[in-house]
Length: 97
Image 1 (tube, rainbow, N blue to C red):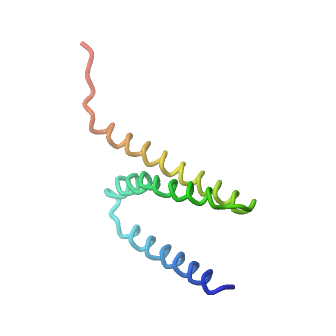
Image 2 (image 1 turned 45 degrees about the horizontal axis):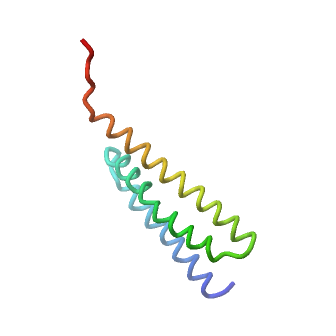
Image 3 (image 1 turned 180 degrees about the horizontal axis):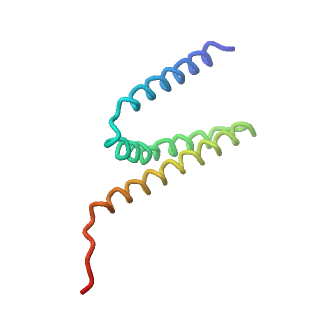
């Protein structure tokens, strides 16, 4: 195992632990707005996936890029759907006479 890979795994695990700790402290009333916004921000991940797709040359690389793109796209779409659903709660509904 190379030193660079070990450093990358360490950063990943620390990110998981910090993310879990931060999200677990969010009150239930703020969880949905926070997560819908965070999911919509995953558009940045899609840009990163496109940059990686331009540089990969192996079948494994293409497979990982595809999986990353699929998960990021699902996150972006889910973020927008949840945000739209939350905003629909605040819309006034017209009553027909």
